[in-house]
Length: 184
Image (cartoon, rainbow, N blue to C red; front, side, top):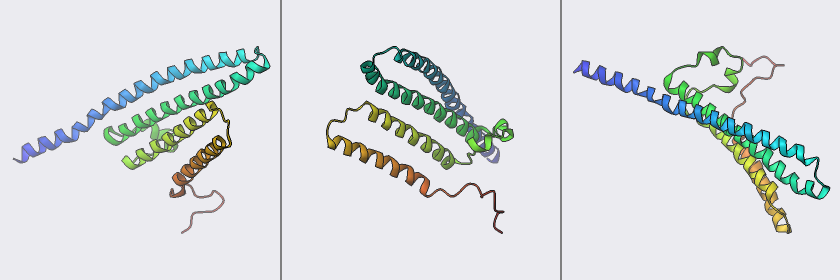
């Protein structure tokens, strides 16, 4: 009976390796969105170059479109970041340590994921930034015709500020100031 239990526990432990599927899928999706974002960036640069050839009236129309496109491209790059963070985090949590990240000077800043809460916190932070970017993209597209429209925009901006404040409020400081030695 003990042997069956050991075999079953070994099977259960090794079942975590199926998490390689979402890791690879996330990386493939990140590559796909990265290519899409690069193409959109080239199209945006083309639109910006054409902007100089427009009349003043046409330039006013194009400004909001160009700004909205810039925000859209930034949003796509942030989604790539989410997918890479997710893939790295799932690998670290279920498969094994990423030794290249441990040796890298960037690794500790980007990939400190010890449990699901660490992964969730990183993902929530990036998702919140994406939502803020999307909000401003929509704000750029809107036409403000009444004072109520402006009040709603101000309320939205205030809500974004409160959301950002609340996400940072309960986080402990990560680094000691360099001027002072750590307290004993």
